[in-house]
Length: 304
Length: 125
Image (cartoon, rainbow over all chains, first blue to last red):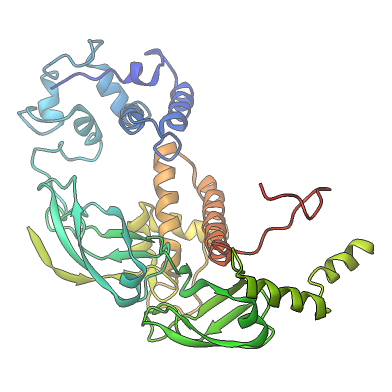
């Protein structure tokens, strides 16, 4: 068994009291927690200080650990002979020091030896990124689970239609196997949607930009717009202004309950980058006869 | 090894979890779950299941799991977990609102409102 220097891991003297140990742990945990630190070694460092704290915070475990005396970290050592009786095992080969100490006070020996009583399997958390189309129609994907005691495994998961951005799913009983007849753990999936070149999802509604020519916006038109089911004709009413949203009811994403969200087309009015001579002539004629002032309301507000 | 395909359960208002399930999922005891309800950090559903009156929307499960993990990682007391849970739920809510607002922002929308005294006919950049 390899010795671990838990006091050094927390940076506290061996005679530190419980409060000092707690304060040192919290400081290091705050620094190295994977939610806080993006450093590549943060997770390993966090595990190291957490393991040290789990032993030193518990008086019984700490006393047992202190029995080992001071040694260089990583040094191979044989536990005191009375540990064989206390831990109910004759062999400490392949037993981790932290697991061994963690079994203290639970009335059962460390991992690798015989355990009574069932234990629930491990839960897994995993993120999956799917396309809008997959969210809408449902999809089956292969989920790679690493870190299982039995080795990596692949699970085929069917995500039914109706997932939305940020949706959380649970695969009950598909996590790590239970110990000694205990229930299997669960898998938690966090769904994110890959960006789509046309549609922007909002829950089960979809939004898209609809570019109109000035005459289409002014006179009204029937324009083709893309939907998840293929293009459809949308009637643009006359006098449609930029920024207006035109709704296509039930053309959004499936909601998983037999319904669908809506599709919103956000109008913006575009103009040609270059004009032909005839176009320029027509626009000039329009400018001369039109009394429309798009800045009239802004000017009024500025005056008030 | 590939297991047979399986369906998944939504963790949203469509599903419910019992106190036992919630306790197992987030590594807390059933008594601690009841204490979080007392603090007002967790809301029970009005439709009481037979036996245990504490039934929750499955929507709370991800935040509860996160709070349970942070509790273990930072050795927090239960009252801190209650406060933390409120903030985690608020962050979830704000992230949803942010995603919703992003969907409303056009890729090529009209020019945004210009601040300051620059003239309207400023030459294009």
